[in-house]
Image (cartoon, rainbow, N blue to C red; front, side, top):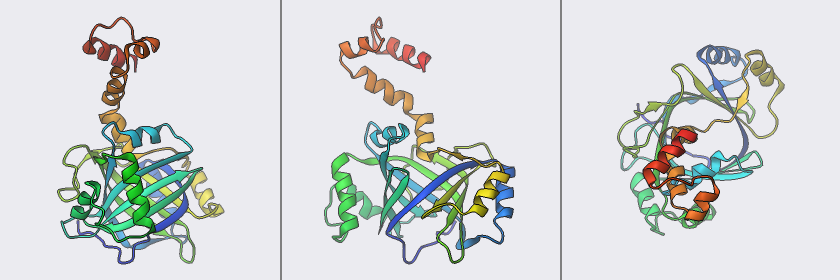
Length: 272
């Protein structure tokens, strides 16, 4: 699918974001109910790929899944399959006390790779690039960890700040972690299910709350990257952390009586 390129991308964003999981019937209902209130933006249905960076032990996503008051992540986003020269967007996303803050700069795939290798001259100096560089330097050893792909339809409220997105076919892959190959991946949800995100500066309008209530559409907590991580690597990471602790710590947590890593791993997996 041809990428839809945003000519003047927003570089700083602050808003509340709420997520909902919808089955096929609810999705169809919502699309119909939004008519007269919101309009699909000029880009229509767009395939988006987000390449998430993390530490070797998945520190960022592990922290996020603990649902702390403050969490942060970094990703490289493309609209459609990227080329070596097409624009992509490096985004630093933080959430504090239910408010989302986003910092975003335009880049290319090659420039971003050099940035994470430590090149200090990739981006022009400025507040946003300094924040992103400080994030990289703080966590160290950040590398591609998961590719999330979905087909998004974005809605806007004419004359207002309300934004809403419906993501179809959310999928992921943990191999071929590049934006330049394909938009293929393993589905995260049952076929026909979608992810609704509502993005507001202040309170949700009453008309939208009524639509959600009538459709029995309820707020939930769902992370695309988090779901992929739980499916593919959570057990391995937790086991490796466990088995790297000293003997006293392992025995304190009830993992005594296992003479080798194989026995310990079997016991761990049976208990989770």
